[in-house]
Image 1 (cartoon, rainbow, N blue to C red):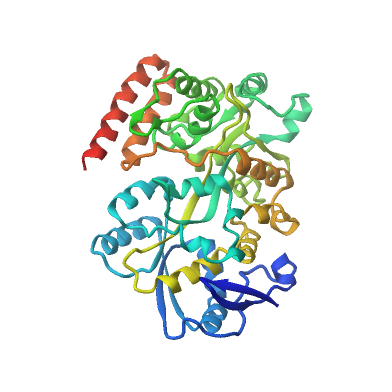
Image 2: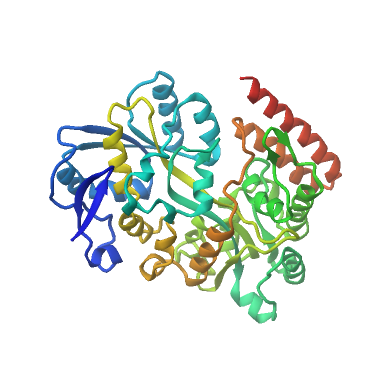
Amino acid sequence: MKKWAFAGLSLTILATAAACGKTEDKPAPAAAAAKPFEGKKITVFALNHQWAESIKAALPEFEKSTGMKVDLQTFAEDQLGGKLAVQLTSKSNSPDLFMYRPYMDKILYDKNGWTQPLDEYVKKNPNYAFDDFSKATIEASTNNGKLLSIPLFTDQFVLYYRKDILQKNNVPVPKTLAELDAAAKKLHDPGKDLYGFVGRGQRNALVTAVASFVFSEGGDFNNGDKATVNTPEAIRGFQIYANLLKNYGPQGTLNMSWPQAAGLFAQGKAVFYAETASVYKNTTDPEKSLVKDNVGFATFPAGSAGAKPYSIASWSMAMNPNSANKDAAWAFTEWATSKENVLKIQRSGVPGARNSVWASKEGVETFPPDLAAAIQETMKIGVGHNVPQLISVGEARDAVGSIAVKAMLGEDIKAAAEQANKELQAIIDKDKSK
């Protein structure tokens, strides 16, 4: 039996072989002990996702040991965002906790005062091991020096490739972006319906993909209140990505988001595919993929500034500052994001944010070994964002994505970058005036 303290209150949590993934893969339950939150009830708004289903399965034991009741309500993504806007704008004390996308929403939510800073909460219990969370995911969950949420699951940008084709042609896995371009060029064979590279080409959707190319060339979308997509470094990153899609991509690339690109790769029609690791099962699922046994994974190749792929907290848990049950809400958060539960949920296919879980045999054995290694490396070197850091993210993505689109269409990329930079600066200035 293992003692676990929630906000200074001790609970007993089972730490059996289950915590090592040797029994049924569901979150670690809380065992019988004192009930420090007897009579308390909290409401949690969550995304309709495997993470929520895994936690929901363990709630009866948690409720039994703590005495609190947890009303876990799940919603589709758009519905969740709409309900949160209504509740938080009205300063309702419900929900006590909610899931949101920090990479898209943290600046807006922080400006509106919709997220309770958690810096003091994470210090209350040394056994929580807050420093075990990867640096990039904490960066993604922080704004203006305040920790606004706890990472639940993550996205890392990696390189997918066809092992059989590289082996047959004696081509090594690319370590640099220059090597990636050369390999894609050599293996590109559209006459046989095989393309050197596939990726997102839609203007808004491509921004999260091109981000790692921009970062690895030393650029970024903005530096605080200054738009920077017209710098030489940023332009190089946009150019490399646009060239890969223009020169070695399939017809219709401009209409592709990740589902279309992943589908084409799974059909065996592309050699390389750069994308978040979280969608890998779309390329290895026997029911979806014709190349399931020949998919390889590697750390994103280095640019002139090194390898700087993104590594973000895609969804995280935040606390409502108007909650009347903050201690109970934090106890739930601490339990749900403990090492034991992160391990359980990760084994169900949801990539977690704790370094120790990725470093354990139990944490990685349900993933392809080379993918697990690529994720681990990316968590060490990754950048904690993949879109412009401002309030109007969707509008900014449209402006930024136009650079790559115009380059793919053969237009002057420097002129495109200058125009996009003016548009992005106008969005930043508009956000500041709100």
